Image (cartoon, rainbow, N blue to C red; front, side, top):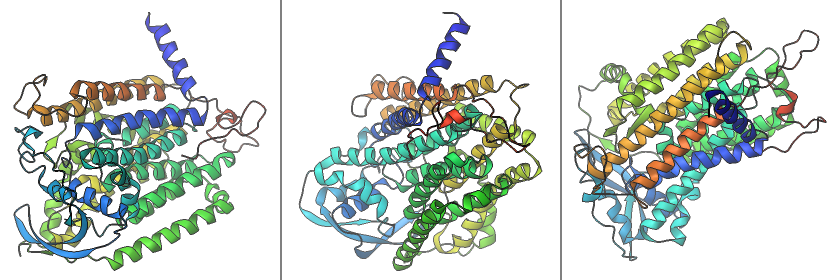
Length: 539
């Protein structure tokens, strides 16, 4: 098959996948779920950051234990000793073994995960402690209920899959929202760039970071669509997506409220003239505002009623100024962590993954600066500054109490706004001719897919044979359920199938009336040939 017929066939397949919002949502959900579920299978139980604490918290909440008894547990983090205020709950005895599953191989990259002891089967009820007991119970209720149906490790894997379902639904909703733009291939590219390997990894394990990041991507995409590319026909469903993403973001951790507010501020900076006025006239806005207000009040009340009473013996030399200096110096590490730093932050992605992902972000930002108006370019520069400054401010204000605890993934629900802003500025301002947008999008997404698959294989190899083992782990010491070949194939196939979504042809530019700016979406985006609205998935 020659190049042209092959390209034409791929384009037709991409257009077929995006013919209706429901079809596009279902396909996007399936592909994102395949990616997140592959991480669920390929990560040893307890092999991701603090997952044992989240397993225990989720199982306890599912059993009606929203709180528990405070237990002061000695801890040593990065050489700093102290006592962490954990929450004691009543669970089957085998849950108490989870905190030690990763001890033999975490931070020891040459060791495969096969050294981890087998999980016991005792159902005797005892006290287990969790450092996640102060967190809002909503996420844990949504992920913990499978532990009531299936016991042992199988139940833990099902809990991971529930987390993957939640994150995949949010990401699929972001893709559908981006596909409503006129230059939808560029808009979808922004979503796929924001969904870094680290975002997919956290989405496949039981950790609230996964839901935070996916909700952040949806909130940014929907807010920018509301205010940068307004369309009255799509306004209510976009408000619903902002509301759903915001509810998830706010109800996971207190930081979610800050990330949501940051997204609102930047979206307002980029708004098209008159867009906010049209949004304020919709009754749906006030309904979702009320729901988000109630969620915010509930989250703040929960956080206030569950303070962190941990005692950390931080060195006297760790002043706010010293913490700020160290945090600023760690900026490169935090950026790498947002792209892919796996396991217990002991397994970085290969350099190839970082180069491709940072290259894609750099291209999008450059195009956003080139095509954006003054205010839009200023917003992009402001976001770049915020990604550096926010961790410095957050860490320096808490270092004397908590120590140096910041991780790149904490900022990711907010930082995803950078590629999304850049891509959507390019999608809204660029002309239809004069630049090979589809070729750029195709090559970029293909590069991201290859970088994504490389990161997955690299991490799976580390768990299977250790970093000193053979490049191809045929003689794996540890293997995920189903084997490493199966999940490597599933992940790679799903990553490259996402390329199809970004190959969809752009929409025709609708004619503007009376010289007004025309919306980016053509009437066919949400209506049939007779102008009747089609059903579309909110998610």
